[in-house]
Amino acid sequence: MVHVPYQGAGPTVPAVISGEAHVLFATVPMAIEPIRAGKLRALAVTTAMRSQVLPDVPTVGDFVPGYEASGIQGLWAPKGIPSEVTDKLNTTINAALADPKFKEHLGEFGNTLLPGSTTEYGSTMINETEKWTEVIRTAKIKLG
Image 1 (cartoon, rainbow, N blue to C red):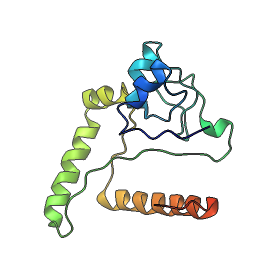
Image 2 (cartoon, rainbow, N blue to C red):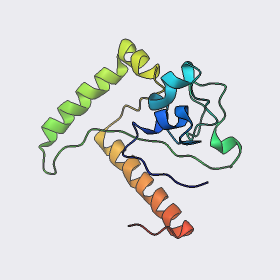
Image 3 (spheres, rainbow, N blue to C red):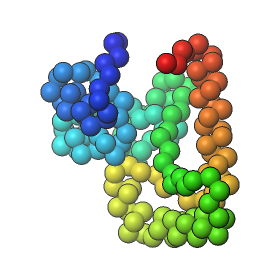
């Protein structure tokens, strides 16, 4: 397999649909509509568990035990922002994530919502950094 770099994620789905490229790693939200339209075929998801919107699609971990790679999005602010501001943002965001209509809307695109505290999010980021640092070290991947 040959890696073909594209200018961002946007052009990759059309490249596979047109046959310019043969496979891609895409986020479920990015690929769900072409999958639903029958223009793309989902082979596997990289998350630890199957996607709620693609329940018949296996995980990579079904074939490669222990494999898991999830994209995590969060809200970031400048260092030194007052804790009352981060607490208010966290409370507001968690309330939105608990709203049934919002959860359903984001879930339609394959998003899994992870409400929590800023401390929990920080721990998740530290754990992810450690995990991928070990992958890079073990595979002797050269960056840059």
